[in-house]
Image (cartoon, rainbow, N blue to C red; front, side):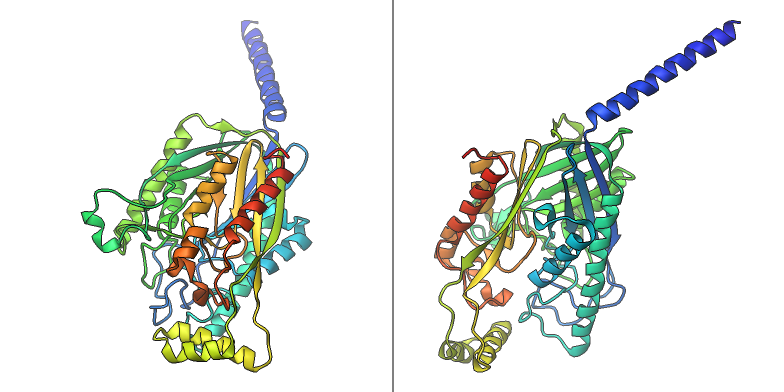
Length: 457
């Protein structure tokens, strides 16, 4: 008799506990989240992205490279998907195709899709990116076309998989810190060991989003940093330091997907650099910064999602004439710059008009009480700083998002010149940005922030 009473009591307790968990799931887990990943390491040798100095195709890998997707859905059924990638950047022609296909397949608009690239310089060339920089033969061009088509399919599929995997979850956010970025415009790399103080604007924040499912399992870690992944410049595939950070986090947290999002680090370099052990070190440092945040109390994100997106037209400076390009060709000693000038001169000779503006992608999300601003191009540090001044220091700011078409200099850098201010020949645009583009971009951020309710009109 005693046994049956104990059994009955145990059963009642189990029922109550089970009911309590079910209630907590419906009350506390108002978000849904789904995550997926796909290996995008090229199967065969092909051209590598990022450096004009490379002279041949890839030779093996240090580790696999990935595209990963985190889908979220709020209490009202509003969805969005964050896509990270171990790539130099999505050029417009590739990004547009992917986002159009996601719209057709899953009904998500461009305001709901974030395509970010880590900007690793140890990934494959895709699409028409940096056309004049790479000296390619027909076989290499065919390999790029073939790989890009496969990549587009993979990205669309991984987004679909993440959406299929949606389940009740909680979201948390917080900023960590790590300090290996160095402003390369203000601190000469060859004098680094002699410097006692680093100059120039910096932002050492490590923005982290933690996703926990209803079982209490760590489902996904989204994290970022503002620094060029240019530790490595060899011929082996890798995600550079962000790749090693993701590997480290996924090994430390089995079953969890770690996604890296590049921030406004276009003028920041990891220094010192140029060795695999350094790339691993920075990856461990970044992973440790994320782990520290995960172990502390983080900010719970209310289940409310508002997304917005626009493409603001940014004017280019005076486009070159045929005479300008002819003179440039005769004087230039840089091979890729000559190819850039020759390509545009051929366009003019064929009767084509050179573009004088560019549609720049601006994306603003309000994830609960978290502002997330994603901007296109190679975004310089000052943009991250100024957006945080407008929306709050806990704002997440991503660059290299949705289209990487050029460096995006601040007004100061555009005035000063130098590589970051005049990189249009690298990216193939006919002219540098016109003075005032910073104001146009930041005004658009304000406009979309008002639309999402982050700023009151």
